[in-house]
Amino acid sequence: MVESVRSPRGRRHQILDVVRSNGDIDVAQLATLLTVSVETVRRDLAALEGQGLVRRSYGKVSAVESGAFETSLAARELINPQEKIFIADAIVEHLGTAQTIFLDEGVQMLFVAERLPLEYPLTVVTSSLPIATLLAGRVNTQVIMLGGRVRGNTLGVVDAWTVELLGRLNIDLAIIGANGVSIESGMTTPDPSVAAIKSAAIRRATRAVFVGAHHKFGRRTFVTFAQLNEFEVVLTGRELGASAARRFSDAGAPIRLV
Image 1: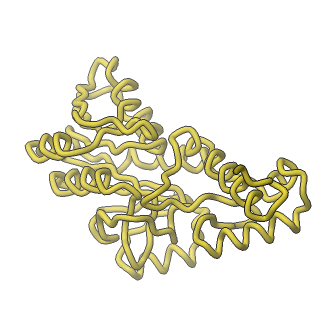
Image 2 (image 1 turned 90 degrees about the vertical axis):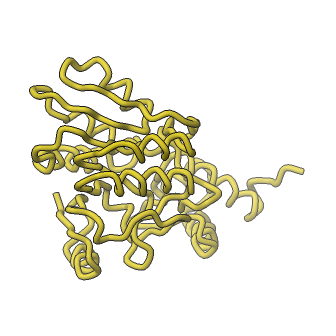
Image 3 (image 1 turned 180 degrees about the horizontal axis):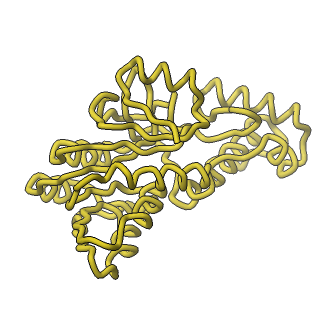
């Protein structure tokens, strides 16, 4: 039997669906969508937050990722896009003399791919179908698309074939993202098969750089794939704040705010 959205339980299910579909959303918008008061929505959000399903910050609500839920690529495009652009702009100066680059899956990596220099030859290894498509037509860029199972949610490639091919490659620079970054658990992601790809790329790379918007910090998802100190630099937005950045730095993360 379908629960009424007028019941607290039914309403909270609807709120969770909306938040997961939108990436993040204002509390006032939720109230308007559900045609209930802001106070009612806040009570429901407090209950959902207590269950570890959502997170509230500065009047916005976002879904908490876990082994059972991961935000879609479409929803991620709506979350802090300007910050992601600033981070992608900043990564260029960290490329150094790298000629072979691994690009992780995700929206942030698409912004990075768009900013890779055109003027000299690069070989880009990627587990992302959108990134491979974006770069394949470039004259000076050779693209190696890792084979395996395509995840419909993110259009990233995973599983044993992907890890096996990565194990044969020698990569100058791995550019890695995460769903959660925490002092206690390091870099995390909801899917064990994705974690395996990220770990393999870091192992096969001479250098590794992390890129991720500030909302990833202070979050923990299902599987740890790297520790904070495994990266040459950890790039995120100034929105993280100096105090939080200092805590992560003290825990071993070479943080740079952009």
